[in-house]
Image (tube, rainbow, N blue to C red):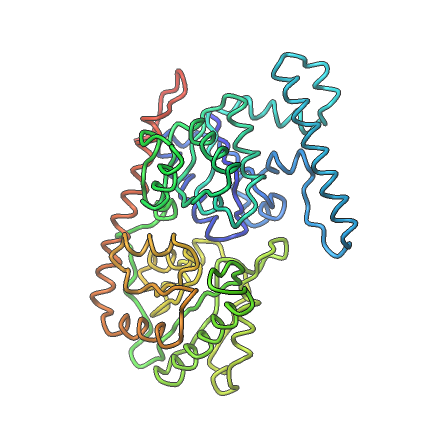
Amino acid sequence: MKVFVINTVVLNTGDSAILHGLIETVREAFGPAVRITVFDAHAAAARTLYPGIELRRPPWQVVTGDRPVRGRGLAAKVLARASRTLNIVRFRAAFRAWRGALRALASRLLTPDERLMIEEFSTADLVISTGGTYLVEQYVLVPRWFDIDLAIDLGRPLVLFTQSLGPFRSVVNRDRMRRAAAGSRVVLLRDPASRDNLREIGVSDDKLVVAADAAFAVARPAGLSTVRHPSGSPMRVAISVREWRWFAGGSASDGMARFKAALVDVTRHLVEHLGAEVTFVSTCQGVPAYAMDDSKTADEIAHALPPSIRARVVVDRAFHTPQALAAMLSAFDLVIATRMHFAILAMIAGTPAVAIAYESKTKELYAGMNLGRLVDDIESVTAQSLIAKVEWAIEHRAELEATIGDAVSRAHADARSVAALLRERYTPPGFVTTAT
């Protein structure tokens, strides 16, 4: 059995955690012999970090040759955009010819890589659009729809894996999302809000299933760590931050200035009043090929600290796999997480996590885990509001660890239950699963 996974960005360790959970779930559903091929936006760089995963360029890149155009001026960017548009028009015409059995004409219009891509996708037993948060309108959606549409147009069974999506205000995106849902065996959603967003555009309830984030599938609840620093040693706190451009209440520059100022004051409080050692580390860092590097934002916060405080602060700039990051976080006493999967990996490791939500997905996650009081909002976060949550978490540590342990166990079971759902919604003809 061949399973293709599309729309991944595994240089983001949070997305990688989702992919690892997806892979475990698919193999539980259909057996360990399933061949899984992942089509990733940075396939070449990702291969060096994840040699055990078969990674390929996604269809969008094969057709458009899409690459960032940096430092070449407006004319070069316009030319690149025009070239991309022409390639898409050419490919769509060729693809129609290929589907209409005009293979000779199609062969003259398609590049060798495009022909191979179409032939390969035509043989996929199942195509899964990965979980996460990418079908939201503040991001560029055209490449995502393109790859989903290819699977639908080739008649491949499709699953949209566990994700947060919407709301969809654009008429084009509403139509594309309805088509994607109609072409899927099941649409897995991380939260009721995403389900409501699809109901609002007319997607049938029989397609929609709410389940825990796929990253919880790799949790090992029986092994939750309760080991922290030795008695008498300083408290250890890990903080993840990020750049955010989509503030609803003002400009990005003003919003980020407020966010960073709050983190400066919180870091000072942790060191001066709680005697803590602070490490800035995140799920998006340490890979030059990936545009996001949260350690740059961490550096700006650290350099705004007085020297006496800065001496107790470390900015970790290295890349970490999900497994390595979870192991690392198990040695901390507390986490402050802007990245949602940083919080998830911390809680999988048994470490309490106070969250700063930049999208509704984090609030939905924490509400489902009975941890809503530990979430702040990036739009309104202040040092005072964050410190109050940190101090509550420290004061109620034993209670919080029990709550987290129970919540992670439930989320793990829920995420793994998707395997049975996949078997129910799709089993290839003649396939006999070896899953137990």
